[in-house]
Every structure is written in structure tokens, then in C-alpha cells.
Image (cartoon, rainbow, N blue to C red; front, side):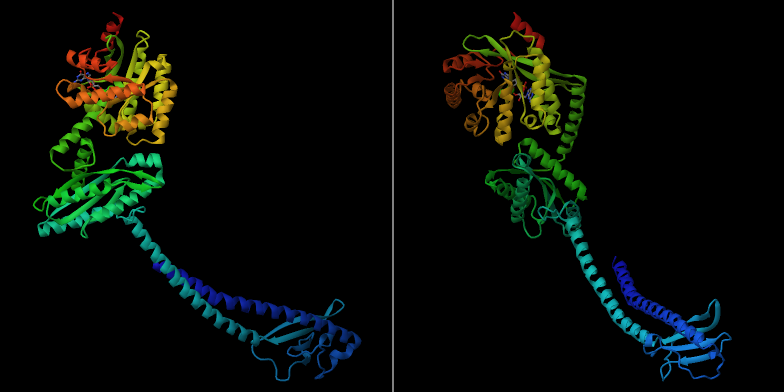
Length: 591
Ligand code: C2E
Ligand code: CA
Ligand code: CA
């Protein structure tokens, strides 16, 4: 590249040094040539005039007649000559000292009517122009040199800077200035080679921000960028000089921790990182709290470790943390591999089940207290997986959420439940679960609207059960969506109430139609005073808010009696009916 620049600079310099004097010379020659030609023509005309006045004039020999100077102007420094028809010089005039070399000349015929009687010639020295050309050459050579130097040094400097910048950009993440994945790979390879030689253990930590997507989606990308910069600053502050931090993309980061006492150092680093990231971040007037999950893999010097393998292991560990509930760390263990394979297989089977219609909904009666009348049912997913038997929803909903399959599965459940409920007596409603992930994915509103339209079910008979997870990042968008759904005429219930940590706050933000008290409280009603107090408090709150309460997981008459005593208006549980196939439920309510 530098060579090309030098060559281009040399070409530009040479062009300047040569072309400029050449052009000057060419122009000077042309100008002189033109002038001589005019001169010769005028001269010829004057001589013709003289010949007409004195026709014998050609006959004089050695006649020292001075050639005429046209229009009376001094002939100097031109030399004018007249030649007879035979080529003999007839007369001549010019500067005393003669013309300096080189001489240029032009001639024109002297005519008498049609007949040419002689030649008139004008000549002049070209020396002055040559000298001027020399001067021009000198300055253009200097100019060319200057051009060569600037062209060669300035672009080379610019080029070098551009190359350096490109190399930096290729190795670093633009947003945070941290090394990127490529550099991270190189450093890991080096660290592993060094560790093998020194007998050290290297730790790789893979980090993934929890709830980053929500910040990005709700506060916008600029806010997301600010958050990432703040996070990378906090992460950097957690590290030691010898550690390498990189941003692998999106909200994924990774750390190489070489030369440390493992696994203790990796663990304490993970704890420091989790604590640092958990602190709230102020962004554009909002207080945002994210968390981080950390997966750790160790490369022992005794084991042949390749960088890719190590990254996969750290990733698997990270995956495990996220599955367990985020905001924590975990070391890789070989069983994780097997679990991942199993999840992949489950995803493929689930996809197939959806496509081939192997998913089913069962319906669990919802009963009014104290009358004991069935007032509706909750639709619950059932899947018989070939070769595995019945897989409980708790096991496959997570996989469906991770893979995005929850959107089509949820839409199917909505259609199916509405279609089924449309055949029930009109006073019965149907409740459908909507997962937090499904709530965030596009298409929920459309799925609800189209399920209602296709089934003809009255919207007020459909209830959507959402968990606190939906409201966890309570944002305008979430509330707007809940209100849009409400505007369709459907009901919204808060599911699993009491299991989150700031439950009461949510009740202010949105007017739920129903609150379902989590079954963990109901199950402990008989033997735990706290649970009884909580149930009483929740029922009290719902009553004062004018919201219906549903107690879930009622398994025996004792629990039912206590709930009646507390004034709970609605129950659900094995005591009243297990989730059952649609046919069974239809018979139950028909009979
Ligand atoms: P959930 O929404 O809390 O559903 C109630 C769960 O409690 C159901 O479990 C039900 O069978 C169980 N249950 C009902 N009565 C009793 C009782 O008396 N004792 C006990 N021990 N359990 C009782 P299931 O069907 O296994 O569903 C588990 C979870 O899976 C549901 O919890 C819900 O979160 C999710 N799920 C089920 N179907 C769907 C669905 O269509 N969409 C979504 N997004 N999630 C679903
Ligand atoms: Ca539910
Ligand atoms: Ca529930």
C-alpha cells in the first residue's frame, strides 16, 4: 500500500516537473511561429508593392536595399529577407549583431497578379523563449519535488492512521471499547499455553445480563447503549490487571482469569461481578436494575483444554444458571452437556407436537364459594411426548419460552380454549395462562382477538392469567398492552399471587379482575399460622379493592372450610376437580 502511494506521488511529481515546461515551450513556439508567419505575409505584400512601383528592381545585383519594415515599426529583432524567383537573395535587413541560435523562420510568396516573383522571409531567434522555458523548468521541478514529498508523506501518515484504526476496530467493540470475540479467542489461546507451561489453572467466565432486553425494548437503544457502557465500566473495576474482559456481542461478556488460585478466585470474582451489576443504574432519569448470570469453566493444566471447548463449557454453565433463575453463578460440570442435548431433543419434539396437533388442553373446574357451583375452568396444557410419557407443563413451558415456541403454542391454546368454551353453558368462563415471555413477544393481542372472533366466544367469558413476571419490568408498554386487552372485553387475572416480592405494588398499577392466591399458602393453611394470616390479608385486600379472589390448590375439606370462613369467593383444586379432558368437563357442567 505504501508502495502504491509512493508510485502515485512520483507520477504526480514527474507530471508537474515535465508537463509544465513542456506546455510552456509548446505555447511559446506556437506564438512565435504564428507571429513569424504574419510577419512574412505582410513583408511579402510590401515587397510586391515595391516591385509593382519599380519592376526593374529585381535586376539590381548586390543592391543593399534595406528590406521594408512594415507599418514603420522597427524590424529589430526580426531579420527580413527577400529572394528572387531563382532563389537568389535580393535584399535583407535585421539586427546588427545577427540572430542568436536557434533561429525560427517563416516565408511567404511575393506575387505579381497570379505569378510568383519571389519569396519574402521573416526570421527570429528562439533563444529568449528557451531561456524562459529553462526558468519554468526549474520552478516546476521544485514544485514537483514538493508535490512528491507531500503526496508521499501526508497520505502515508493518513493511511497508517486508517490502518491502525481499522485494526483497532477489528479487535474492539465500538460501543464499550472492550476487546471483541476475536481478540478474546487469541488471549485465551495464549493464556492456556502459558498456564500449561506454568502449571496454572485458567478460568473463563461467561456473563449474560438479565433483563437487558427489557431495558432495550422499553427505554430504547440509546438507553441500552448507556447501560452497556456502565456495565462494562463496572465489570472492568472488578478485575485484576492480568484478567481480560471482552464483549462478545449484545449483552454477553466474558472474562479470562489466568494465574489465580482456582476455583476460589473465580468464585469470588463471580460474586464481585454479580454484586456490582445488581446495583441500580440511573439512565435518563430512570432507575434501571439489571442482574447478571455467570457461567464458569476451568482449564486445569493437567488436562488438554482447547479454547473453544472451554467457551462452550462456560456457556453451558451460564445456561444452567439462567435456567435456575438468573443472578447467580455456576461452574461447568460434565452432566450439563447431557442436559443440553436433552433440551435440544425436547425442543424438536415440541415443535413436532405443535405441528402435528399432539398438544392437548385439560380443564380444571373453578368453583364459587360457598355454593360450590362450577363457574368456569382453567385451561392447562398437556403433552404426551413419544417415548417419554406425559411431560408436565412446568418442564416444557421453559423450553418453549427459550425457543420462542411459546408464541405459537400460546396462540394455539387461546384458540383451542375459546373454541371449547364456546360450547359450554353461557355462564361459564375459561381461563388461559399467558407466560411472561409470550406476553412480550409480538402477536399476543392478535392471537386473543382472532381466538375470540373464530370461536364467537363472548370476550367477558375469557380470562387471561398472567404472573408477576409480566409486570416485573412494569413499563408503559406492558400497561398499555394490558389495557388494550381489557378494552377487548377480556378479563385479566393475576396468577400465583404472593410468590413474587413486591406483589402489592402491582395491584395499584393495574386493575386486575381476579387475584389467584398461590397454592403454597393454601397448602399450609392448616399447619402454618403465617399462611393463614397471608390468606386472610390477601382476601381482605381483594375485597377492599373490589377484586375477586381465587384460592388455588385446595386439596381437602379442611382447607375449603377455612377459605369459606375467610370469605374467599372462589376456589380451584383437586378437592373440587382435577384438570380433566374437555369431554369430561363438558359432561360435568352439562349434568
Ligand atoms: P398454574 O397456572 O399455577 O396452574 C395450576 C397448576 O396447579 C396446574 O399444574 C394444576 O394441575 C395444579 N393444581 C391444581 N389444583 C391442584 C391441587 O389441588 N394440588 C396441587 N398440588 N396442584 C394443583 P400444571 O397443569 O402442571 O401446570 C403447571 C404450570 O404450567 C401452570 O401453573 C402454568 O404456569 C403452566 N401452564 C400450564 N398450562 C399453560 C398454558 O397453556 N400456557 C402457559 N403459558 N402456561 C401454562
Ligand atoms: Ca394459572
Ligand atoms: Ca397459579
